[in-house]
Image (cartoon, rainbow, N blue to C red; front, side, top):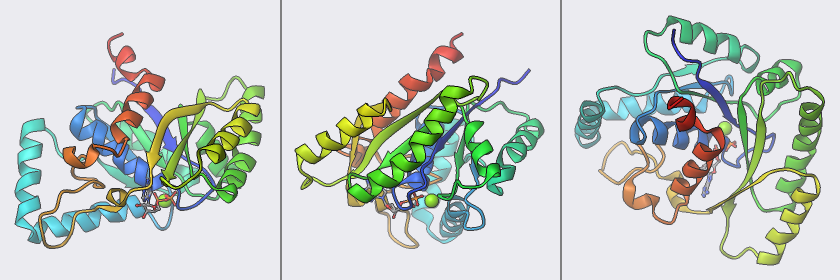
Length: 260
Ligand SMILES: Nc1ncnc2c1ncn2[C@@H]1O[C@H](COP(=O)(O)OP(=O)(O)O)[C@@H](O)[C@H]1O
Ligand SMILES: [Mg+2]
């Protein structure tokens, strides 16, 4: 029998804090660098920005021979191709994922769900609750904090009341932390998070232009954010993405499960 993959989402109701970015970065890191089998359900319907990104990148590969040969070499060395990205309505995400998994001959380790920012209808909430793990990117600003907490606190309470939910844990992490932000501010926010008993991850992701570094139509620049390549090794330095991956793998204990 095929193993059951873990369902993971980067989710929050705040827009522009990195849900889709980290969905792509983690999926590509685990699939192309760590050798896991990954699939992505793009449930931010109808935008489907991750699905669109893949289509855009494939189009670029047709004319950009540099990236094309890089991709061929990568797939040959890995013995596999890109991970599948399925576009679905958020309330149908779980059903579509199950249908997809049944139809596949290979097993998957992780399915990432990119959920929309509006989690205010029952269908989206039930998809959210059927995740195994949710990671919440959070920008260190008052607005972002208020928006994040107003969403996470009721969800955590609901979770505490229902042991039958799939969702094992929700972990928050800082993203887009500008070097100029005062340390006292971060500590102040962290105090508030602790008061509510919410788990905050150690890794802090800096604000950095590389998080926007995609493949281009022409040129041969190193790529950080891509559904076809893992984040470039040199660009990883100082991005803290590698630390985030390690911390997430520790939390989800995927390798322990794989080793039985
Ligand atoms: N750490 C970061 N540094 C700089 N830009 C970032 C960072 N994280 C995300 N971004 C950028 O922020 C924008 C919004 O991110 P996105 O993942 O689309 O947000 P969401 O899906 O939560 O709405 C993107 O252009 C992305 O590249
Ligand atoms: Mg998004």
